[in-house]
Length: 307
Ligand code: NAP
Image 1 (tube, rainbow, N blue to C red):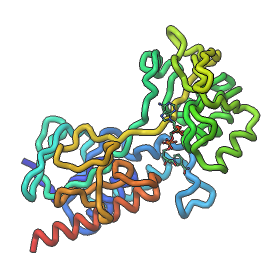
Image 2 (cartoon, helix red, strand yellow):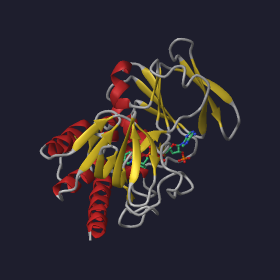
Image 3 (cartoon, rainbow, N blue to C red):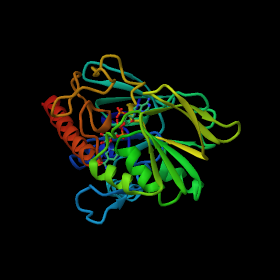
Image 4 (cartoon, protein in one colour):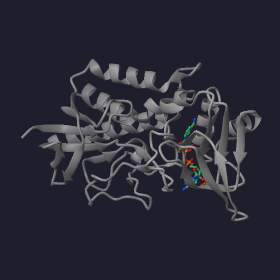
């Protein structure tokens, strides 16, 4: 059976930073990533708040640069899904695809997945007008009418991005006030293409083969109305990617992994980094910091075990 000192699960910024710090410290490391490296950076048009890039950088470009940085080192990589983890005494086993692999330490960096509205037709019309990624799908809606659902930074930022492409955006939010930063709110309110639809929830997505509208309910009056449009972009937050986590790992009430300030979980030798961790600030820059901290702590743990 293959065996490693550290397995990093997840190839976003937290996972790539952790792997980089581990291999540079001489730790025999495996990085497991389901798809391509980059995580949610791949879905971010422009990162304006990552230090060192005063004019911003495309999400995919930063992801590529991090992946390229790692390529200079001897880190094993598997592009597959982790299916099960067995926690042991000092050694753990991970089922990746059909293969069990042993490791003395683990860093979880699997991030989050987009939350759904769970309204009629959302699933059926996914890819046929329903989207969770403006960067991926925005181009299909050039000069068309769309709705953006949500009131956080993602909904506001993505509305501003889409406004460069589409003819009109209905920005549907369930409360009177947006949650996102004031600077994004101001830009959205000033944008003539963006029409806020406040105190409203999407109750149904309309269309047989493709989206042709939404039904919204005003939560104050209870009244329903329909809006004709071509696409619906949903940005209502996210959930942790945690279905394969062993039951021994302690989670918070929302399913995110609890860690201490060294990124250590309640199980010795197991760490968490990035968006999967219970914390307030979920940003690329904090993910990278988490990854470096977790790797440093894992290295110290392995050294201590080696005596
Ligand atoms: P978020 O901040 O959690 O906002 C989710 C939004 O969706 C909230 O406005 C929420 O309404 C609404 N919502 C949740 N469930 C809903 C439902 N079932 N139906 C209708 N509306 C629903 O999520 P996010 O915008 O994805 O951002 C996630 C994190 O990433 C945040 O910490 C954010 O600051 C960060 N982020 C930062 C940047 C940046 O700094 N450039 C960019 C993007 C994201 P309520 O307001 O009523 O709860």
